[in-house]
Image (cartoon, rainbow, N blue to C red; front, side, top):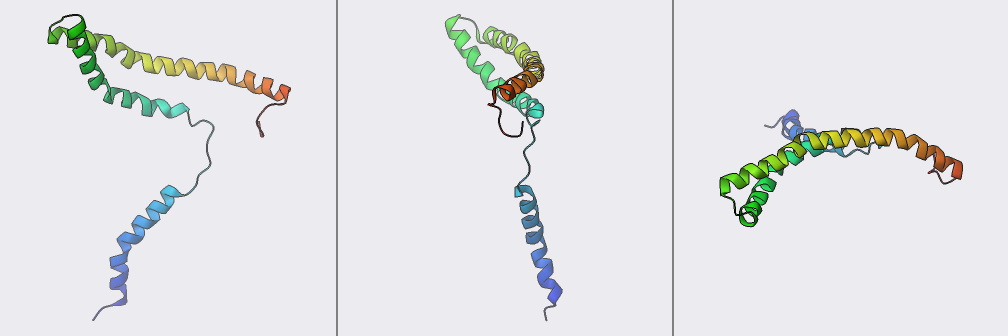
Length: 120
């Protein structure tokens, strides 16, 4: 004989999954500062593509510069390591500073010209 709570136990995982999906898909307000943490997405992704880029550039350097494979890989590593390690965070920081400096000025200028987007 089945008990009524057996059906609930069988459905519990499906209910949990459905509730989780509903929570994740629930519309949320967009935030104006959403671009700030983008470096946390871009920088790790740049390290993921780092290895294929180094290998392709090493193959090109080997053919064009007539280098041994090991030297071509070393050259490609040296050429790509610093731009990836320091260049991306430094560029992101500089662009953030420029945005913070220019954004308010541009917003005031557009408001004075009467072309500002609604709500600004």
